[in-house]
Image 1 (tube, rainbow, N blue to C red):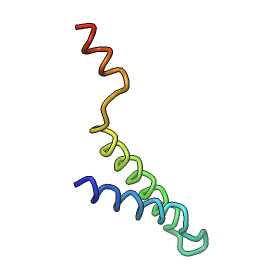
Image 2: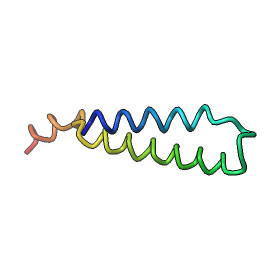
Image 3: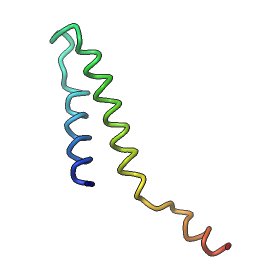
Length: 61
């Protein structure tokens, strides 16, 4: 599942940065959608990364 999110984020980042301005009237919508997909994908990928303070919190309890 992680590999799928990485692939989706990379493809969306490509479309966000490399879509030409004059390609069509909808290019701004394509860029906005690609940036939203990148942000959601990164959020999903970072959910499984543990916090740096997790060890400290467990020691205090």
